[in-house]
Image (cartoon, rainbow, N blue to C red; front, side, top):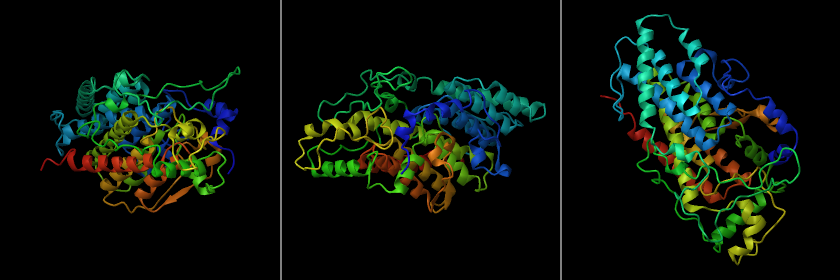
Length: 461
């Protein structure tokens, strides 16, 4: 099976890969190796929407933005860009009261101005050079100036609209009384496989839980942040839990003899971190790969990616709401330490202090899976926009430069649903999620996308 990501990160290769990353703020142009969309976008299909999406994809990587926050950061610029264009073309209804823009304004310029105004807020980066380079493509005149002014106005409106959405307090890793931690044997506790008392680079003994407030952020498309919250997890003494425990112990172990070579590759392929595009970014990347071949004008394409950005953000809210509402232990902590406390009569539920997951266990509760929620929302929304789920596709890892194990690896899928399912199952093969985490999250992600597509931005007539 080769070296695992866990083992690789312990060595010097991780430090070397980190040193290869561009500095935050240094956005590479399309066509360069550091550009994400260069990997999947045909040059003749490049346009304003894809250009700016590539910019914030790179910024996500270069700032090392964590997945839930990345999902939040993708949404606001994409929505702002669409609203600016739609205010000029007046094709779709919108609930934010943006209104109509000035006649004769350049729509591409307006998209860029709105997008970068919102992006500057969420990434805390001005994008000055990127804006100048883009605006310099257009001749001076009233159309350009009106586009800049209108776009900036819309961008500021969107920023103001989201100012008190609960995201600021959610950036810190403190509970702040938003969710109550459970007290029974299923209660989540940090998994500390990287503890080191030696000098030099090392992981913290126990990291605080990541973003306990993410699930309290105001959603874009859901009626409430808990609309698609998962049902209760299995009782630890139940036969269903014993079955889950046994599956993860066998297939998710770092040195599992039952996980196939393909399953090991899947676990690594979809890990999406650290310092990379992240799962929500990966599904926007896949959407570009698919939707570049669907004829759409600027209004329709910007609407499509606004919907994708909004539902990725809502997927993060939904998943993190379930995570902290249920507060369920990760498999590694359960198998190594907690098993005797479950009082499960099944002999398979026994402790194994030497057990470690194939990929590193994240520092937040297990139930449900963020990966699966992001994947289901992204794949379902892409299929709805494209008009079909049956889209054969091949793909490489967007961040294969970080993982030598993925160089030369190309995966092939028949449908978008298969992509989402494989992405979610990667967390089972990696040993970091229970199967119930994946199943419940797939339901939620699919429901988020279905509802958003049916309700957001209908045509004006």
